[in-house]
Image 1 (spheres, helix red, strand yellow):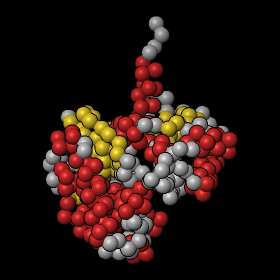
Image 2 (cartoon, helix red, strand yellow; image 1 turned 90 degrees about the horizontal axis):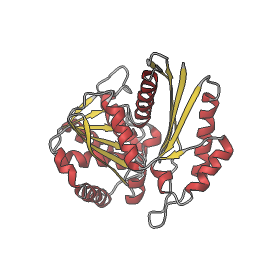
Image 3 (cartoon, rainbow, N blue to C red; image 1 turned 60 degrees about the horizontal axis):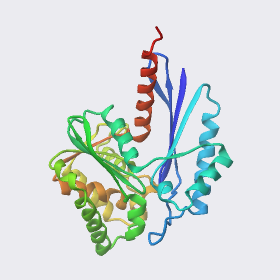
Image 4 (spheres, rainbow, N blue to C red; image 1 turned 30 degrees about the vertical axis):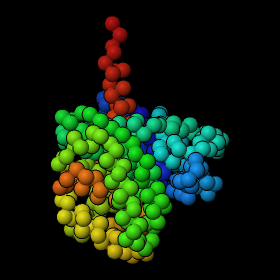
Length: 317
């Protein structure tokens, strides 16, 4: 039996999933941990982004809490990856060295295309997604994949996310009409620059990432689902999605924090986090979203399981 741990250090949150993998290839998730670290907080858009000391301290504290869990496990295999915030940071090397010194953890900074591919692997192995456009909205980036006949035909990572859009356009508290218009126009122009997105016209969206999951959780709370956080495979029509976005827009940060299903620590970035999905639905004239709980960490797990299966099949003569 192997304990396979995956740490995903994003722009907004740091997450860890630990899975017990048996010799016959069966597996069971034993731990799902999350800490909101806001690693990309207060990045200066006019200069090369820099990770600030307070954000670094929060991140190291979160990673130390994860270590307290995984270091007790036998036969541990650990893979840690970092995405947009670390990828763009001018002080990336210094930050990674700080983490290595404090925790002894090596973090691999993966390109946006790899992030999109792992998202795709995590989704197609757990949802029936033959033809769709997949979107993962994170804190500092948005991954898009056009899936045709179950295969990733095109993929890209765009530099927009819940934190970056909220800070760039002042969407954190009370939102003005001009700020919302500027943000939505910015995202629409970005989508227009992706030539292959038009090939996804009228296809359903498969959405993952904390902001998109929040959209699902709010609606599941409204419908009084017993486990409102179990959103994997949940579907929403466009009318419900637009109505929910309108309700969120009508509130300031304090009001959004009181919306059932919306975590308080997302209240100041949720509008920026929902805009990409709203705009992509309109861009593609899509009438529904299918939500996925699985993405990058599960994609890494499935890649690992495939590698183990290939190794076991190579029986010496």
